[in-house]
Image (tube, rainbow, N blue to C red; front, side, top):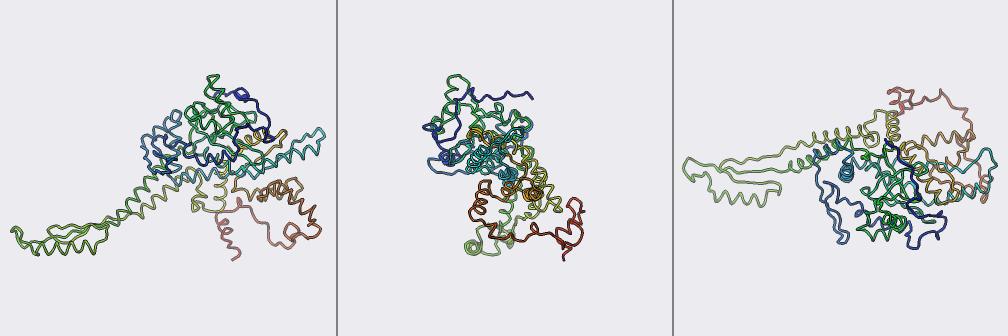
Length: 523
């Protein structure tokens, strides 16, 4: 794979200064909150699902407030051709992934399952430190304070989980970050049909570039979005280069398949056909269940001989009573007819129970192939160890590529907003591993290592909140001298423990794990 050149941010953008005060914002530059509100009102129109090949064919008319639900089916042959030639079907595969994202519950849950494993509260904020020089306490505290003040307003989990969901669905998320001091940050998702990866920024994360022809028919967006789009568009007009790279204080690009920046393929492409088969199976079951309640009854009109109109019962009387039965006795899902002969019925057999089994089996196979079986199908794990290591494998698949990129992006943005920011380190720990990681950090704290603030962030309390509450309790209220610590296993020795130490889960057999899970030794 050819090596892309390092992005030079200033080459196609105006010179910018650190965003340390509101006065640096352009006169017509919208705030982060204004852009957020605008995007929420117009995101359906912006995502342009109506252009997706064989996907959602009609969208809401924003002006008339009309909602359309028409959805076209995909041809399996078309899907196979997309998969066989992935490099030339980037847009088609992305459209198909969007279709499945909104059409298939299991596909949607898989994307969200992997994306929502990231937890950006599992972090350390580390000030600059030189082991060979004297480190100034006041400047260190000042930089730490400024960094925490910004982090408190960013809503990192909310913004980057949205970005992660799109990267799971489409492989790449492109966005523009708006930051307003005191208000926070909003990342505006951009149309991937007009985006490319141009290179990488100094922190090592991907640098996005946008085709400025996007604004030829969208001048109102160019005016409202403000910078950097206006400067990028003007540069494109003057140089003739339609793709313009985002300045480093704005650009956000996350690629799930980070090992290959050239090829863009939805992450779950290998299961597309299986998901479509599952949808077809569910649709077939719904039709069969609807048909199972229907019956047809016919009345056979007997004759006495072979002569014409030699009826055993007067037809006028028979039809009179038959019509009365139709009006008073038959429910709407039963049809009736008159024929020469006896009264019979036709039923449509219900085989839905076996179809449910087929759907469950197909769903399980998809989850076993794509991951998520331990969480999305809890019956798949045989014991707690299998469950734990299954979730660990899924977590590693997800966060090992997302966390490093997000860390680089956040630190790059912070360095654009703060003159001398601290480094933010996000740990490769998912929400399902958080409790175990907390125990490990507690042990390190007990051994004298400096992880007290980190430990409390794992309890859901931010760095600044921890320091503020410690100041309140110790300096203001002096609670340590007024209250005695509660007696716990951490404040007293355990001399009354009996029996040998508990074995680790990895040392137990399946039967031993079953005994522990069901607490059989205490019954």
